[in-house]
Length: 155
Image (tube, rainbow, N blue to C red; front, top):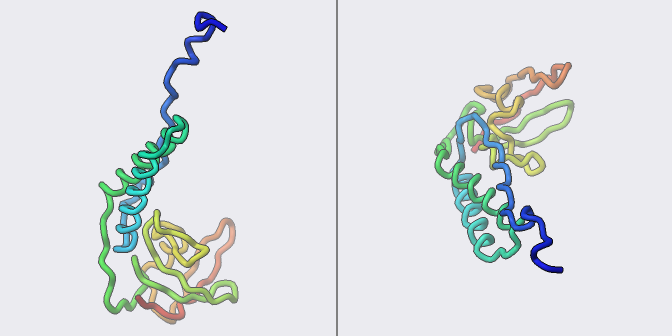
């Protein structure tokens, strides 16, 4: 088929991928979170340098923009030496609905509830803020209220 019969749209560059949503909350990070941001940015740039597929390049450029923004806005919160209350970067052991679990309050990009990382902006973390061992706090979960007992606070 002659080139004369192709549509102009076939030659148009790909539309840019929409950026990943960035939270309006301050970008608080632990020292580990700061390292994670640097590693994610480095990985995105390395993958971009090797990518040849235009769609994959667009995805990687979006990732690079996201991690550049997170790098530029990060606020590293130093580790508390001997915390006595729940706060950012602190590990808390709690009892909720009869189950004991241990969580660490971290930055939004670091959050991984399956591995104990809870975003500081989550309803549970906000409810626990400032609580000390032995205290019970109320956490609103949809239409119900859960009671969460703080068993221990540590680094």
